[in-house]
Amino acid sequence: MRVDTSVPPEEDSPKQITCNSTLQHEHHQQYHQSHWEVTADFVTLSMPVRLVPSSRTVRRVVAFATIPAAIAITIQDNLYEITPVTGSSMAPTLSPDYELEGRSDRLLWSKVSASANLTRGGLVIYTNPQHPERTAVKRVVALEGDTVILDPRRRPGTLDRTTGREDLDRVQAEAWDQMAPKFEVPFGHVWVEGDNWRKSNDSNNFGPISKSLIIGNSPIIVFPWARFGTKPWDVRRRSGTRVVKGTQGVPPEVFRDMFE
Image (cartoon, rainbow, N blue to C red; front, side, top):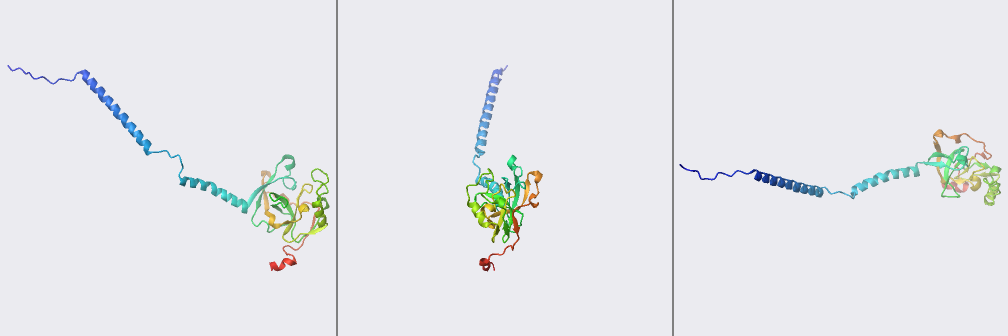
């Protein structure tokens, strides 16, 4: 009888199986951990955060900001402008509540050919000849060539228009006396006055203004809303200043050869 002396293959014990399984699991975790670390580093390196905008982006932002501003400035300087009417020199026609409540009308002015097609009784905004850094709004009373018969109530220096005391500065009063009782508006000039003679600083104080100082005409009220679109100055108000119409646009004889 032959006895099989070969040793049968040894089967894995439960303890060995458990150890192998644990090792495989740890190896698997290490693999995945290293895999994700590498992947995260790869993503971080391949997608850098851009903190400084590109020059193209900067150019776009500058264009979007400057172009509308340039258009607005061009319109305001050459076409139309909205300005408030402060003070009470044009009351009650304009800003009638300014002195009591501080509320002012806002007018839209046309700057296209501002000194052309002026009419008696119309409104203009002009550079103040006494204070060039300021503008003023007044009514055109007389045009070039017209003769103005001055109103004695508007004589400067008679009374201080705010305190009732005699004005110490007599220069304007003396100039007014030289123009009185009537004065012909020279070529290229207009005579302007405020509707409220007690509060107005106008041609009675500094004479007729050059048409080159006029920066806007043909206005319309845009605020307050209750007065939107109205032109209360079209209603003629009685004025102590009288006007004898003359020939408009005719230069003096010494300048006629220049215009022929």
